[in-house]
Length: 316
Image (tube, rainbow, N blue to C red; front, side, top):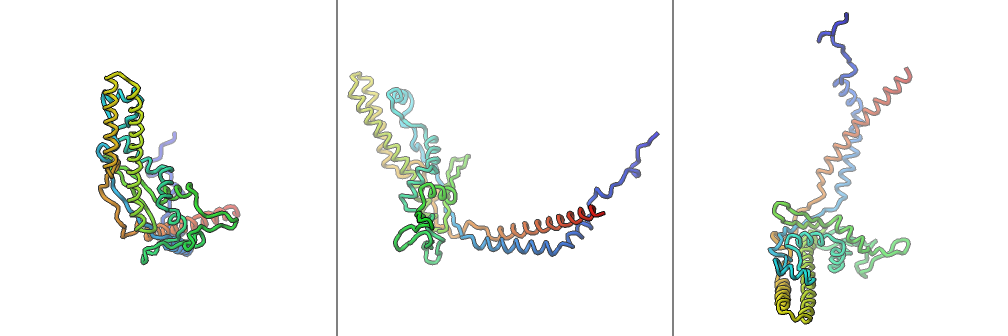
């Protein structure tokens, strides 16, 4: 009858255990390959970090204004307005959500870029002269003397399209985030120019406020025109009273909108010209490159030993 092995009699498999001395011996034997790989990656990482231009970020903290673009009417009067075919708008929170999405929309950004003539800073420059506070133009793309875009080898103009402008601005320069706890919105703009980063952030906030205000004024004025036409078509005293109240409310909306500079977003913390770059993180890039080079070097040593062991096993 077979007996179960006692703890002292349990089978031992030496091949299943990792011999740390052999592991370190293998690494030591391939130390020159590891060092070489680490040095190559370190040099490459440092070169890459140095080649990247300094990027500055300016941020502005915004709060939704009280009653910003809010419901102009409510209750029974609002219901009568709906029956009359007048759109009285949503609540303030929904209007803020719309404003945040409009801020990142292609139509708004395209108009913003063209209105402020940002095509050259986005595509026609090679950097920023921090000493003279002016752009360094890429003269292979744009001629600053004639203010003309050059052509490529095929003769096509290098002037960027609206699609290119919005894609680059939205993908590499603009970021919009919202604090879900308090509703605060942060608009951040990155640029090689610290002055441009601050200016663009201010222009964006001003632009979205003006855009939403003009849109609400246009809708209110259209409603007033519609209500005045309806007023002339009815002889019912009750309905006339409703129309007068609706017209009064829409007129008040136009007046308040014209008087309110910060219509949708109120600036809590304005953007300032950044004095410190936000990226690239050159020390971090160098450290990551060194670690990556060291790990790849160790991996290469073990792959080399494995292949050599496999070949020796085949030969035997």
